[in-house]
Length: 223
Image 1 (spheres, rainbow, N blue to C red):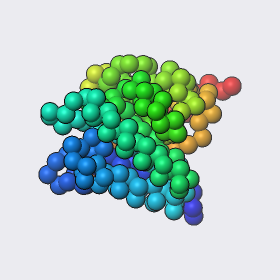
Image 2: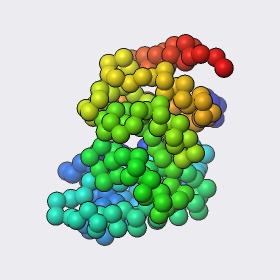
Image 3: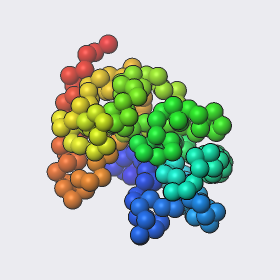
Image 4: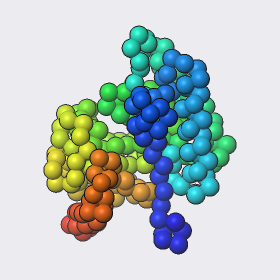
């Protein structure tokens, strides 16, 4: 990676990695203590990899409460797990970042703020497309608002109110405005493009996304 001048952000949201029959399970909200511990163990292994590779951050999400689990109970389990992940990150000198995910217990950046109040070292994995889904804030405005908390940024196209990651130019994302905001806050980390469903044609989509972003950046006003 050093020879190729590559950066690294570890994203941990694979759908059927820990359980081949239940999407995303077990999470930090699993009713089973064994299940919650398995998620923490997995995240800790990701922190180990990040430390070994000198990556920027490990991003993770909260999970969805299972049927019959009260929200307050789920939140208590999340706090317990987040504290464990944050402690493991601190021990390894790695940044841990929580990603608000539509439909999960931590769905909005305000939910993230509530969690960060209890776990101050937890950074924000800001997926700008999710802001269009929840319509809580404009993406560029959120970049500026959370400049001090951002651990990593994901940028892709989406339509307002629809949680579907799209290639650039197919949704409602104002990409130049987000790039301008990232320049304004002097963000120096990776800008990740999350289009997991496009992996079968990654050989086409990666060059296309890079070309789109480079063209958009060239058109930004100079200071």
